Length: 141
Image 1 (cartoon, rainbow, N blue to C red):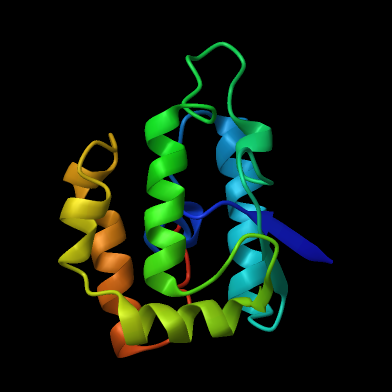
Image 2 (image 1 turned 60 degrees about the horizontal axis):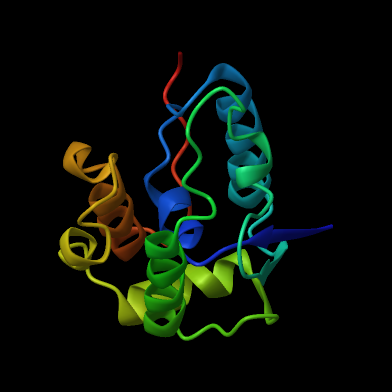
């Protein structure tokens, strides 16, 4: 099974701690996260636009999935990591590229207008990957 992801979700996954836009969104994100955590050799394919995470965005909220700024952010993050649209990498290879090319401090500029950025979760996630190149266990809810 290949998981389709857009650029900024490569970093969002590192910071995911079980919180999100809705219960259904969190269930979907947790399933993707756990698949990658437990099976880091899972293939991800970089795509343009809404991906497997966006698929569970709540329909009763204003979606940012088609926002031009999000597309620009996707491009910036993919370029920084070194992955191109259409390429398939193992999740562990994505993590290795993040360690080699992304610093925790990069989150402040890359994700400056993200509503989640002030919480510091993605910065912490990138810092964690630098210490241990695998996803952390999610906190008990």
